[in-house]
Image 1 (cartoon, rainbow, N blue to C red):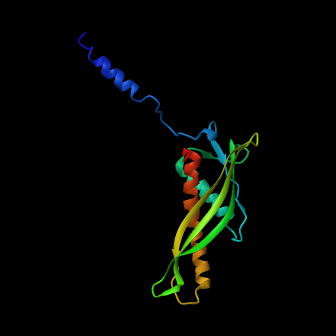
Image 2 (image 1 turned 60 degrees about the horizontal axis):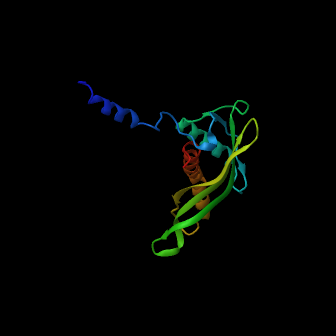
Image 3 (image 1 turned 180 degrees about the horizontal axis):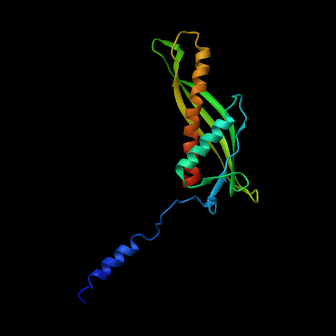
Length: 174
């Protein structure tokens, strides 16, 4: 009887954690998937040599998250196919005193991702995700070549943003 006051306290402590569990919480469509494979992306744009960059960025983000393991194609539970659909550059800020010149641009990459169960080929998930970054261009009025080189250097940053967003959707569902 002396410890009767501990019974309600113990009940409160035991039921307060109901519904919680340790470890990764995967979205419903990824239930049972533990290993993934990521081949090179398909490129539907005119930008060259970005297919492997995108695949490597996705692999890096999945490995950093740790929810899934990246393996060879034959050993994977699921396959992620990616398609680069668009690369868009738009002006964000003009040069002070000359509204016809732009000094800051926004670069947006848009990709379509498909997740297939490797053994059956069933489509588990399909979605479009975008990633973006900004870059600056300084110089004179003949800066067209500089804009293209700066854009080329900004593509890995936009790809990283894109893959952070997609990896969050893939591993957490949001």
